[in-house]
Image (cartoon, rainbow, N blue to C red; front, side):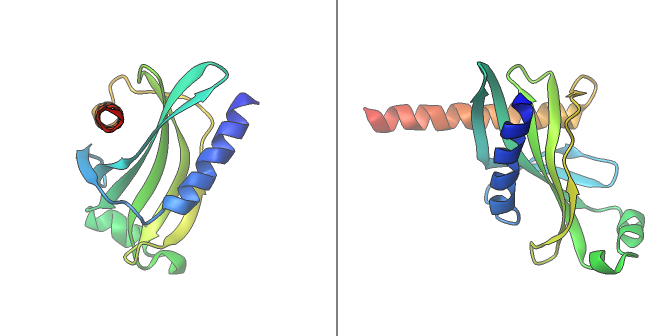
Length: 151
């Protein structure tokens, strides 16, 4: 139950942010493309005493066969990437995909793939560890900038 309210809030954030990535940093290669972290989207969240790290990531598809297969669906003919909203626990060992969208060449949502509530392990998933690390670094930079501005 505690995750439901948090996920609803994250999904509302994701709807507002889809297609608006501003500052992408490469996190790694996937089976079908390249994964980038939107470091401007990083947020820390607290729910029931637990800390979470929320971040958007964009997977730009580069695999021609995958794109060909994906574009067989009429509504996905202009698909070029996927947008994910990841939610990590505070030590980065687990994450969930709170939202997942297929995006077209104009930055519009072609398909809402929904989200997952099941936690997944980051262990052995280099690109996910990179997403967490880059998001955490961005959050630390935001905190430092905020601290400097208050002085």
